[in-house]
Image 1: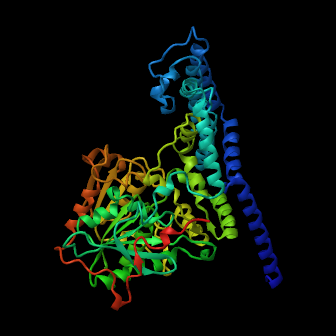
Image 2: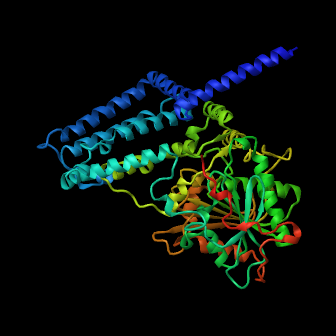
Image 3: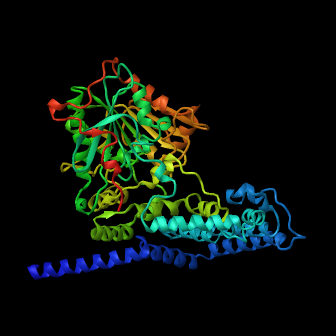
Length: 580
């Protein structure tokens, strides 16, 4: 039988291994080199044993070489029907149609096409490894794109000639400012113009409850009467809540208040090393459950319209399922905004989530007690490297054009940390094991099942979501027979949700499935769902109104006699905590 010395030896070995992985994570930016090596080895070994695929790639290369031959010399360069500007938006400038830029552009596009074919359809390659290989190829191609070089970009060369190099001097100043701010852990230039409680997060309200994990905000009424059912908003804990309360003109919270709703919102604490042991159960108990208890004291007997955004929606779906299991009927409806409940196809984020990667992150978090926002931001930048990195560097550092700061950009830079235990549980139980969708997720020691949900559901997906792809969000249809209204809106994970009425070029599709109705595939749903111009917000508030009672006098802010006094003005203290 194992002895105490054996246990001590195993503990020491585990401590040493954890320290080694944490040290590796510091050098690799939290990315697992083993995961990349396994993917490359798997792809290369199977490609070496696939003569048919090799012949296909060789044929493609010869055809591309013949095509590029037309652009080798100025005298032979010709325009093609599908010119670079129409095939790649990074080559939209007219200068890319001129030699030698058309040669470089066509070469880049040919290389991208070849690597796309090379990393797809190789017999025997594990799908996750194939995706990693394709992702790595895209990263290298984006890095080596001629558009990222001064001499390789016709727009930069033209601007430099016209300004006598002044654009490069401005770009150098921008790069120096960004570097010094990053080293000093300061927000990006211009973010200081958007401070919570002053320019953003200014909807009037009070903090009516506070614990070690969250503050509960109750907003002041803006109408003489309100709907009897309050609205509880649960934001993701990886972001500051005021994505839903930006400037007054695009605040979802202010819009709900203006439509006659009593609104409560959770503001999560920015955790530090002392919070390393906070887990998913704590976010349920200290977050959603205590928020509902407070609302029950402030608006006695009222059922609640609960709405969750991103991971906050996932957490809310878990809580609602546990409440349905336990016979707790305090919820009137459930709205999930860009929130996944089935993680079998979670999108491109899955590139960074496998056993090797999670193990490395856990070792790093064991040292710090939390995951930093910079690590999360780095992953998102790589997923959208052109939009979030290279196009910005070209515009700001080569063309010398500093993009004006917006409220959404400033919010995005105001990031948060995540406790080590919670983040490890979230990655393993949801992303790796998909426990929620397979009825294995435990709350209070017993599994919760989304099929227990019977209350009306409103679900929003966004067309260009890289965090919670809408087809993944759509999978909720397969997990419950509850009545479900699904909305697909234009925009991405953030901009698609912050989609106020009057915002230009906004549109959405919507289609309701009744209780027990047939479930369509995503493609069938696209064909059947009617299209609408404008914001989806009025459709949501109209849906809430249809589930609400007659308006009545607004409740007081807080309930001092019931243990919920007003503690402070909104937006409270937790939202102002910065990452050190």
